Length: 330
Ligand code: AMP
Ligand code: MG
Image (cartoon, rainbow, N blue to C red; front, side, top):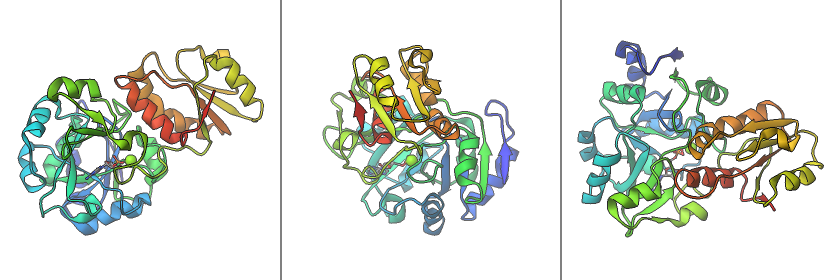
């Protein structure tokens, strides 16, 4: 079942069928401000296992538990002082916190870990849906495992049609990259996945925050897997003169594409050129959609010009490097 809702003006009644599905152990895709999620009742092990099945997700890759109210946390995790401070500042929003789990959360959700990832979205549809269920909702991104995360309902349909009980179309996602994952069970706190709540923003609130080894090399479960990859191979352009490096390299391909940032896309004279945006935030918002667009247009290789490090640029670089499996051209 597919329903279309305008996030700015929808009736909660329209969400009742989706809430019913979640309450009765089904799975439902819904929009959030980061990417589309595929949700299930986090207390229901059988429902949660349907998510792994629908996505083809390895069992050892834990899910994020979504809430609509901080009062729900007492059943999910132990909230530290630091967590309280960050929750007050950044929730609802694109920040996931790793905290010690309670016994009520099944290990299927946390992939056997004693810790659990929790987040409160700011998206009005996600929020209303979670509130209507009265449940914590375990949800990873609503893509097939390994593919770029979906940031439009069409991308969810491409991957999940026939694999879940309902898809809610709420338009395009605002941020376009998944939430920042911050591990608060280590000292200093470690970012396991960069996102729209940046290292700089977190440090301003709680002092020293480091990038966990997960950001560069795998540490957290799930991070060892190939991620965000379109069909065509992705190559990161780290060359000083991107135009000359790309045009040399692209001579080996029939239908090369360029994901362009900081250059006019025409400068590359390639059959497919997608403009990533005027700044890092736009790049983030368009990144996954663009990677899927290269596949739709039949690219046989994708060159991507990364943004500089810092701020949300770190999140874009992280996803690009994973999509490319670390491969660069100089
Ligand atoms: P999703 O947003 O699609 O892909 O997946 C959630 C991500 O959150 C996973 O890839 C994990 O890396 C991370 N995550 C969830 N739970 C934990 C946890 N308990 N410890 C560390 N990382 C986690
Ligand atoms: Mg994902």
